[in-house]
Length: 64
Image (cartoon, rainbow, N blue to C red; front, top):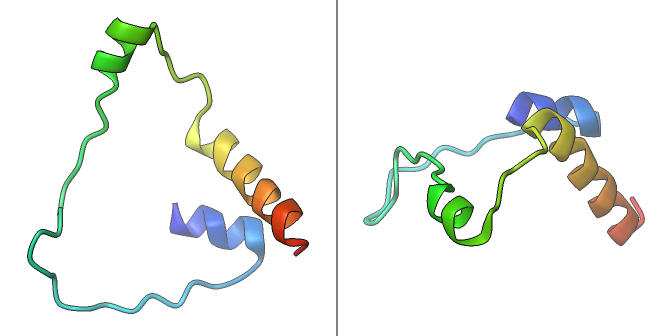
Protein backbone atom coordinates (compact mmCIF):
# COMPACT_ATOMS: atom_id res chain seq x y z
CA UNK A 1 0.00 0.00 0.00
CA UNK A 2 2.82 2.40 0.84
CA UNK A 3 4.50 1.75 -2.50
CA UNK A 4 1.22 2.44 -4.32
CA UNK A 5 0.72 5.67 -2.36
CA UNK A 6 4.27 6.74 -3.23
CA UNK A 7 3.54 6.09 -6.90
CA UNK A 8 0.21 7.95 -6.83
CA UNK A 9 1.50 10.99 -4.96
CA UNK A 10 4.98 11.17 -6.45
CA UNK A 11 6.40 11.42 -2.93
CA UNK A 12 8.64 9.06 -1.03
CA UNK A 13 7.42 7.84 2.34
CA UNK A 14 9.71 8.43 5.29
CA UNK A 15 8.71 5.80 7.83
CA UNK A 16 9.53 6.35 11.47
CA UNK A 17 9.84 3.09 13.35
CA UNK A 18 9.06 3.07 17.05
CA UNK A 19 8.80 0.45 19.73
CA UNK A 20 5.36 -1.19 19.89
CA UNK A 21 2.99 0.25 22.45
CA UNK A 22 0.64 -1.64 24.72
CA UNK A 23 -2.50 -2.48 22.76
CA UNK A 24 -0.89 -2.33 19.29
CA UNK A 25 -2.40 -4.85 16.89
CA UNK A 26 0.22 -6.68 14.84
CA UNK A 27 -1.98 -8.70 12.51
CA UNK A 28 -5.51 -8.05 11.31
CA UNK A 29 -7.77 -9.72 8.83
CA UNK A 30 -10.70 -7.77 7.47
CA UNK A 31 -13.86 -9.81 7.84
CA UNK A 32 -16.95 -8.25 6.37
CA UNK A 33 -19.05 -11.42 6.59
CA UNK A 34 -21.31 -9.95 9.29
CA UNK A 35 -21.91 -6.81 7.21
CA UNK A 36 -22.54 -9.03 4.22
CA UNK A 37 -25.12 -11.07 6.12
CA UNK A 38 -26.88 -8.16 7.83
CA UNK A 39 -26.63 -5.47 5.17
CA UNK A 40 -26.04 -7.41 1.95
CA UNK A 41 -22.71 -5.51 1.74
CA UNK A 42 -20.19 -6.75 -0.78
CA UNK A 43 -17.09 -4.66 -1.50
CA UNK A 44 -16.69 -4.10 -5.23
CA UNK A 45 -13.69 -1.76 -5.34
CA UNK A 46 -10.16 -3.14 -5.09
CA UNK A 47 -7.33 -1.38 -3.26
CA UNK A 48 -5.69 -0.65 -6.61
CA UNK A 49 -8.85 1.11 -7.79
CA UNK A 50 -9.96 2.71 -4.52
CA UNK A 51 -6.64 4.15 -3.36
CA UNK A 52 -6.25 6.40 -6.41
CA UNK A 53 -9.83 7.60 -5.86
CA UNK A 54 -8.97 8.41 -2.25
CA UNK A 55 -5.82 10.28 -3.23
CA UNK A 56 -7.77 12.36 -5.77
CA UNK A 57 -10.46 13.09 -3.16
CA UNK A 58 -7.84 14.33 -0.66
CA UNK A 59 -6.15 16.46 -3.35
CA UNK A 60 -9.51 18.02 -4.28
CA UNK A 61 -10.41 18.57 -0.63
CA UNK A 62 -7.13 20.26 0.29
CA UNK A 63 -6.30 21.77 -3.12
CA UNK A 64 -3.03 19.93 -3.53
